[in-house]
Length: 478
Image (cartoon, rainbow, N blue to C red; front, side, top):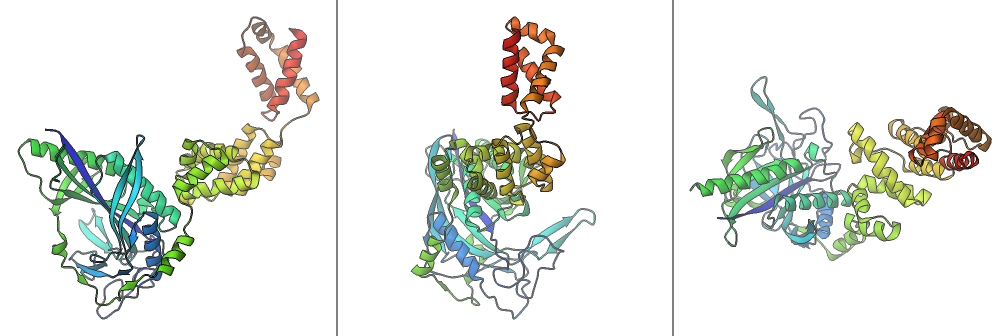
């Protein structure tokens, strides 16, 4: 029997607010354990929460960007469960009236486009973090993350391959970052996904029993986990077994999933309306103001780069994949008005240096003005492209001033025709075999002479001047 995988996602996105959802504690990542905590987020008796309005603003913005209906009257609910990283023994979330519903996101895989339905987006508070200490064989609890605001984006079970899942997550991450809703730093847990997987016979409309893998924060791990778990379920069914509804843990080192506990349903959490928070009424003016202030999203930016700047579809997609990269590209282009040159330096030198130094896009501090300045210096014939690469690296690593660095390292281009002519003459005299090779039709010999000339001039010569004078000299002797 042929089987088809069915996948649904619950994506948790930590919001980029300065304070937590119901108190004034900082949301800053890191810090000593249990130092970003107060009586409200640690669940002390008698305290009352106060909703952070920015959380609602971000939720509306995310909902509009994902084509959701905004629930004009929504409210919070208590989700009850007992776990060491949840000091109140309940989580404030939204079950009955979530703020966003019935959305959709278009993805593209191998040229095929498809809409993924979004069942809902709801606001909730994050739990703490369990730290497992292998030396003392114990588990410690850090409550710093308690109360950090989250959006949970719940998809419909519309995915039929791991490739579709990654395309959706990539688009969702781009969208949230461009909106300014979240930094989506997966390595810090500010974007993570719960992956629900089942399999069913091809052609069937009845979904199989699902399993869930929680808190996955790596695209590579998610891709491998989906393929592994779907195959595990197929093999289990083929052998006459039964898939159990359960939460499983993905082990990246063993490339396998392992059962953790039985999977709960909504009724197991004993939801009821949150008595300490008033319902939220969202006016039409609030939604309209949000729409007016929506930033340009990646898809629209890509289309504009292609039409306005003449970039290829591939180049535009690479440049816009990270908000900070797109910002650098636009600022540098606005200064020098050479979009293709800026694109080449960003995709070439900048991304090479980012890879070499393991620098993330959001960590970039390079000044776009200096990138534009380097491009202008090359365009004006003050340095050649070889020197420009060196200057660019100095700007990236040390925030160097381009013109000062060029002067200090004697990188200014030699464009003195008399000096170039003298060096070319010396190179021709010193390489009689190359002259004979050129006479016999070996074109590479000419390139060798150019290289020797550039070497003698320490790479600072204008290549156009070198080629022009070399051709003139060769014409005289050939």
